[in-house]
Amino acid sequence: MRDWQAVKGLQVAIDGPSGSGKGTVAADLASEIGLPVLDSGLLYRFVAAMALARDVDLNHADQLAALSIDLVPQMDWRPDGIWFEGENYDEQVRGEEVGAGASKVAACGQVRANLLDVQRQRAASGCIMDGRDIGSVVLPDAQAKFFLTASLRERARRRWAQYKDKHTDTDLEQVLMELKMRDQRDAERQHAPLRQAEDAIAIDSTTLRADEVVDRMLGVLERRKLIVTTA
Image 1 (cartoon, rainbow, N blue to C red):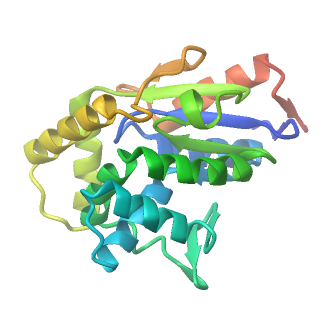
Image 2: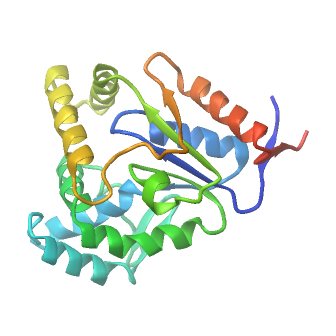
């Protein structure tokens, strides 16, 4: 096994639809090259969670924008989650209701604009960031960009398996339908829609294990001399 070290300030953008394996791959790649992982989706989940807690209308863009402006100076986005008032909100933002709300929050252009500087500032010293518009909008100058995808049914199967692991009784076909709707919302939203950046490398993970995807990414980073071996 080779030990890798990332060049100073390396930014790796991993985009893709829900269920494509971005989070797993980002974490595994990070452990290989020693960079922190920043999940941009947590930002929108956090705003959604706070909106639900404060009875802010998730369909009211102006209210969501005002809430995000209020939250940004107070929150601390770290690789281990979002910290607010001394508490890690990682667990609070993982629920299905919050996830559905995050999709609405992410469609609000002003919220996205309010969170853009936060993402760029955190990435300045180097990171792996995953999301849906990282390579196309958030980090357009990232040295490496990947677009990870998989078939709709495979992504639904993975999500369904996650629900089963959490002892959540969910029908596979229902999960598939929800993912299809989420894909449509992400692709058709007016602000920063889900799309592959022109200079991103597409990887279809339908029949690949996470470690096989990571190996492909390592190969790209090595060829570009963005990682060097320490052994």
